[in-house]
Amino acid sequence: MRALLSVSDKNGIVEFAKSLEELGFEIISTGGTFKVLSENRVKVIDVTEVTKFPECFEGRVKTLNPYIHGGILHKRDEHKEEAEKLGVEAIDLVCVNLYPFKETIERTDDFGEIIENIDIGGPTMVRSAAKNFNDVIIVTNSNDYDEVIDALKNNKNTLEFRRNLMIKAFEHTANYDAMIANYMNKRFNDNFGEYKFIAGKKVMNTRYGENPHQKGALYQFDNHFDNLKTLKGEASFNNLTDMNGAVRVAVALGKGAVSIIKHANPCGAALKDTLLESYKEALKCDPISAYGGVVAINGVLDKELAEEINKIFVEVIIAGRITDEAVKVFEKKKRIKLFELGSDALYISGDDSDFKHIEGGFVYQDADRVNSDEVKNAKCVTKAKADDFKDLEMAWKIAALTKSNCVVYVKNGAMVAIGMGMTSRVDAAECALKKAKELNLDVTGAALASEAFFPFRDSVDAAAKAGVKYIVQPGGSIRDDEVIEAADEHSIAMYFTGIRHFYH
Image (tube, rainbow, N blue to C red; front, side):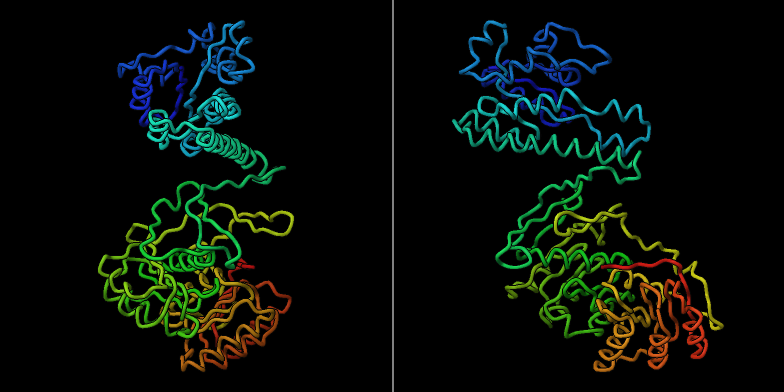
């Protein structure tokens, strides 16, 4: 039996090779892997002894050879005589992981170096071994080393076992090629090439999809969710999308913020001096909608805050960290789900792109981001001016992360009213104020943000009637003059950012 080992990631390769030796395998290797194995007293054959041809062209060609690929690809029954005639010896196990292309493009912009870190021989060997999984074991992940050794030792090297490794192998090369193609299109085609490849690594199955009759799973880009821990419960598809919305709002507002999400939209948000105060203020905005909602804690959830949250039913809590004492508070709540990201604060990946499925395909775009200076650099278009921008900035950030059409009212670091997902902006404004009135929330002196321009003055008139002090919006309507005039009539300070944040 012979095994070919050629890996970029050397973790565990020495131990794996020694275990294979103990099982009677001859080890063939190349370049850096050969050097590491030799230095660690593994009896290893240089690939050039097999190919009968020297490594050449600065290492670009070393395994692209019939003695290698014939050894991997020939069918052990049907091609045995032909292999013997050609002097091709079987290679029964191939262990390959590829040149570090991702690490290279993260480290340098030197295109020459990037090109040299596109693996050719590696993917070819992986694909050869995967194609011939009936006879060959293909290993592409160091996490599988122990399982492979166990299978070889304990008569578990079944066709099904090798088939599962084959699927992993094709996933490995597909993801690698997709990464290269996406990079080249980003570098040379403004990120919008003839094809767009979206690849994610599975993190977990969800309890179900949007509805119980649908299946679902969470996939991640890079390693974003590696530190996501489930402390209680099982996430559904809807839980995860709502958690994403809640975390985005809480992160946008800053450490110490709390956001509450229901059906993908904010129904509460606040940033006060303590997390406990932030939660209490966030809950006031819409405690009815908060029931059964998702709470994001941008910080550490402790026992005191847990006891406060436990006074109502929330379905999901996600925090930077959750203390053991806080987890115990929810022990008797069967339906609650607890998640943490393993740090003292929440974080998001900050993806550069965004896409959405439509029937028959998907639409793809650059990701929308709210820059920290958008309100700071906004143009005052009214006679009145703001003397404090904190509430304006908070309202603007929440509005950008809320389904259009939307308006957001913030007062003293807490959202006090919100209208979202409406077909009319004035309806959104009036709906928000109606709910605030029902909950006895005083909007007087609040800052109002709209993610897109006001097409008419009616929203400003409604805001003035409620006592709004400041307004921030993109501007750009053909009736901007009328809207500004309305603000001046009511002595409201209005700012134009010049940036729209539609969120459909």
